[in-house]
Length: 468
Image: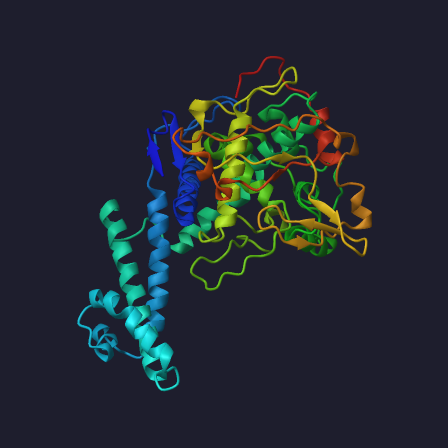
């Protein structure tokens, strides 16, 4: 991964699919964290004069940051502390793990590792104690490896401590998901679905953000936009249905000024946020990490179901290569689509090349389909295939909600096109473009009729507006 330039100029970030998945994950997260820090700083200071909502008024003073390296250091620090606590509970010192094998340094382990392993494997019962000692030695080697990785990153950053601890990062991640993704990312997500299925309706930031200003017009009193855009079986929808029965009506719309502040800082990464929202709106299996090195996202205020998402994103676990690959592939597609002016009269391109963090990769762009991956089981029931991992699950399409899931008039919308591939090295042979370079399919179904109605009824406040 490499970065060039500053935020006052065009920024291009290249993602190599042959790199370890965690590297690409941290690089994507770093871009979002940098945007969030600018957003939070601007919101706290309130020193900047409020500009026009649709003008290009974002702060351009902050240089490209190294948040991805700080994120990686933070993860390694957490792994190191957990392994250290487990490994050294007996009070043993470093050399105590080497003496049973007549080793003086860990450098000697490589030459005898196979010999020790074969010896213990040949006589497992009589060598049980030694096998445990070898396991402890391997863990000690892992500690040493983590220490070397942390020291290497510290040398590159010229610091021994990451920029923030996990608690501070958790708050940053919540802002990205609950504000950037849920509003700015969803506006781009909605715009793409509108353009694909209803190409006669003009596309603009004003129109697509209007759904968050429209209050409850056309929406069930005990529902929010989440309930119409997300799959019916996402955790947030099921939880909301249980909770809101006993609660008063909550505010489900934002002010124009609040949305303007979000757009001002999150627009450079809006294509990444849109990719996250597509994934968050689907009923993926909950993540169950093998340990708490990188705990999955939890809403900052679990009693407020208005801030709940499906709780699943590539930020849940850097080791989840599937979600990272899907997010990157979808973001590349949204970037390519958002830079083009939609065909409907009065439409404007959502992105300008100079105003976004441009992503490049040798990853193929995803195929775009306008319907769910449903099929019929042998017993006649409807099942759904997850596009990222390929597993089968029950979509839980309840009878009283099925009719509201989509506007049936848009299902036959023609021309769901996608560029063949993203920018790719010219010297790469076709045989090298293996299956690992393919993105999962991108599902952009028709919009629910309630959301479509709000978009269709939107009337621009001014006859002439600046391009945004």
